[in-house]
Picture 1 (cartoon, helix red, strand yellow):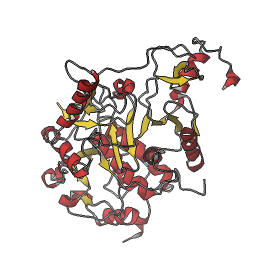
Picture 2: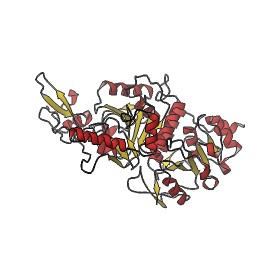
Picture 3: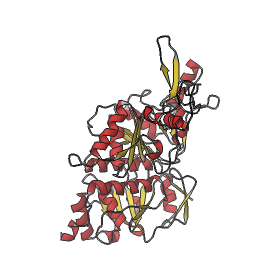
Picture 4: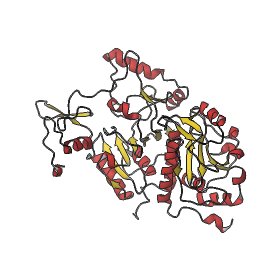
Length: 186
Length: 289
């Protein structure tokens, strides 16, 4: 572990995590809406929003899986020092972080009929977040929303599992949009 | 603010509650179990709502608390003061000025906007609990979407009383999937459950959090021939004359004389400030409050 993992966390955790969570909650409650999520700086290649979300939501109770290029020693050390979250295999993870092409959705936990909340949240790092492309409808959306998604069929499949399924957060820079399992993608 | 962590709870507790809130928003109407903490107030006084409020609150929020619509009851005053002390947030009694509103058993009359959050205090989150005491069984019923028992209960209401007699905590179906207890709000408030604000429900003793994202489809259960009906006392508010608000009934003398007045004190006061006067009201004076 080098000194890099000691920096980049919240300087005022109670205040900064509260502001960050408000952004994350707005994103999850209003699918397709792009919200600011900032406060922490994780090592490259993690975005500010992904790093901030991990710091806001993860702790020793949550398994984190790093997929593909995100799985570097620097990122591992940073998460371990800043959150204490165990780094686990994809099938055991509560939170999965990575690029879309590096994440195998088929092995992730989707919950059980009795406990659909025991499912993974997937943080997908994006090159950009744009309010155009796929049309979204469902809870949190007044009529329809639009969001540029890395895939459409995968999210349509996920929605058919409801109330089971995965919940997605898309991060780019200091911004986040989300797509919970309840959203229907057209 | 040196004596307490911001908003009282420790950070790990807030993270646990925040994760539950996100899952609740992703699965509208589903009750997410959470590790409810002991709070410095008894169960039944809003420990669930307080924990949810503490987890969503930021320093720049303006906080309002209502108890049966009123800002000035003991419960509302105590919780407001609790967050003034532990979070240093600004508080208000005006619905439109608030960003986070914690409520016990009412939805404000004034429509909420998309930059507001409504936090409900919930005593019994499980709508099937009085029909089926076992948590194992009710959980299975939710999993299998087996809600026949609830319809039987409403049907028994009709056969016994000629109408659906359930007047509060009237069960709703969320997005065509989960049957949910909207907390003991009067059924007059049920049509407002599809709204622009985020709605979060916290049950402290029962350790459950659930949520309704904005504009979620919420349907009050009913039958084709006995549809759901939002009801209120057929009177106008005696103080402000409002005919569209939910009314409290007060017995004002030994002869049983009744008086009806808005349960939403801020709504009533704003109407009186705007010049509306009810049958027994007096013109509003600023210092009268």
